[in-house]
Image (tube, rainbow, N blue to C red):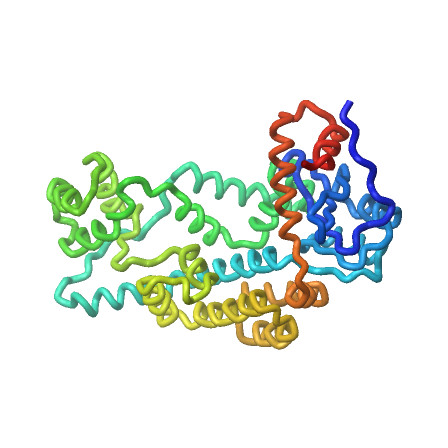
Length: 389
């Protein structure tokens, strides 16, 4: 029987903590890592407040604890190691900021669409606009699943079910339940529509939609097929026919301008400006001109990312005040979230420690866990994690 090395009696001075899934959405464990040496200290069988707090009491000595934003961990630290400095992980902070920026872009798609239509009308004023049926979401599997999941979650919420109970009942992750609880159905459906695979026709849909509108829907499919084939299309005629039929039925929005997706806009905002190409920088400028709220979110996000890269935590409080007063709603929510954990976030933007090494070990645990195919016990998994090359 493989035996794990003995755990030191005292915790390392800089301790990293994070959860990992035995079975995603159902059972989780906790990984403890010495951030200075990069070695795993211990593996706990669950992620509860009581288990982690008991471990801290049995192994005193932690002066710094690097963690994500899980409230159970911070409560355990304050109870069992109140003198330790908590450090919020910078990667998780940027991930939450990115989600707030993307939600802002989702909420202001109409601004981008209106701006694109105005630009197209200015460029080709002689073309009479075509009146098409209002666009409807196609009844695809992912959209129907999103709609039913939203109804199921909100029905259970009305019955005062907890997040954990709903997650167990519907076999979902708790973060998924929280997202469906706090997001409008229209926004969820729009996100689901953008996740649909575009296929071989996707690079040519903007051109097809423009041609369809210019000709009042009278252009033949054979002619369009030859035109996009000359531009590099390698798909079949049947795919094109389906797209034209959807345009005539109003189940595909006849986009007159090329509107970048919220995720793509978010990637341009979150990356350092010097890494953007000239065309990406120009398209982001057009987005900023189209919507003042996205512009404000962009400025705040870039300022926060600068704090992270250059460890300027002393500017965080002023940034939070500006965001709560002037920013769009998702960014205000992110700023409020930071205020609830202000000391740990400030330490994360000031001190050199982070949970990066912990995330690396979480990935290693996933590899070991999958290699065991769920047949072995927790004791064997713990032993294999603690025994390192």
